[in-house]
Amino acid sequence: MKKNILIIAFLLGSVILPTLAQKQEKTITIEVHNNWNQPQTDAPVVISLRELQMGFKVKSAVVMEGSDEIPSQLDDLNRDHKMDELAFVTELPAQSRKTFRITLSSEKSTKTYPERVYADMFITDHVKPEDFFKNGVPCDVFALNCIYFGKKSAGFFNGNDLELINIHFDKKECFKKNFMKWYHPINGWKSLVRTTMLMIWPWFPGFYYSHLPSNFLKSTYKEVWGLEEETLRATCMDKFRTKSNVNQWLIKFWQLASGNFIPRSMKIGRCFHIKERNYDLAVDSVREGRYKLICINDTIYTEDFEKKKREVQEAFQKLLPEKSGFEL
Image (cartoon, rainbow, N blue to C red; front, top):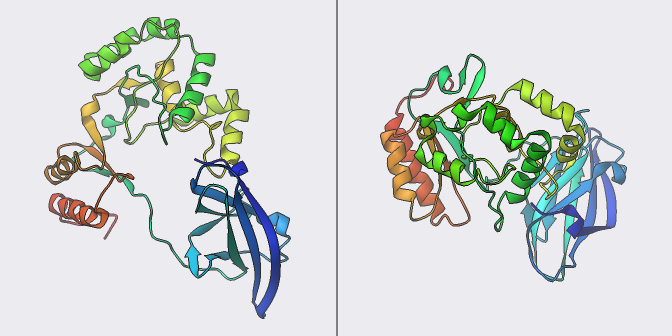
């Protein structure tokens, strides 16, 4: 979630190596500066391949910092089957610079890099289509909520979502139209309390959401895109999330504000952002199949990751010892 503008990259030199008739390579050296007085964690570095005028179709890349390879990825932004950008992240101390050597090749690579973040959603009990849609209408929990703005939170994006919601929807009118959905008992007493406490404001302060599968309609995407195309296109063009972006919750919030949903219990699932205090409960919930849907998400606070990953896998193996039809 860093802005690319904070990182200044300078092209220091390049050389083309036609190693084989079918293979071409170009090696460049760049210098990345952090001119801030604060260190940058996972600072994004994005290099436009078009500006380099490669002279061949780039299919793979290797980024080196000294003798260490840095995970990177090539992206085709306009789907013309040509790579447009190379992106990677790096750690930059305050007022520092780093030098990287990048080799771009016309030869495709099958190389993969270790995952850095594991956020997975699973079905751990029997579900049916009606758990997600009824008569073509998405099922969801309704509750008003406040947006949390904290360190490394999604507050900025949710705030941008709510700005658009309050532009296009009048809270008072939505309440009159969808009173029975807002205060349906299936939402749960905590949701009803949240909604009641936040009714004093004439605008939408936020909606409750959980890190679980969401049910979106294509018609909602079309409606939102028709009204806010400039905002959505701007978000799509950013390689890394910036504070001006919206996110997928805009679609969810739009459905909730418009009343285009059927109330559903939040007991259908639970998300665990793994920390020491909730780890045992998460493993037990998987092993016993307590929920229909479950999300296991590691965080920067997850300790002894490999051990925990192995124990979670063992819990799933006990719950689901047989392969599914998709795995056979």
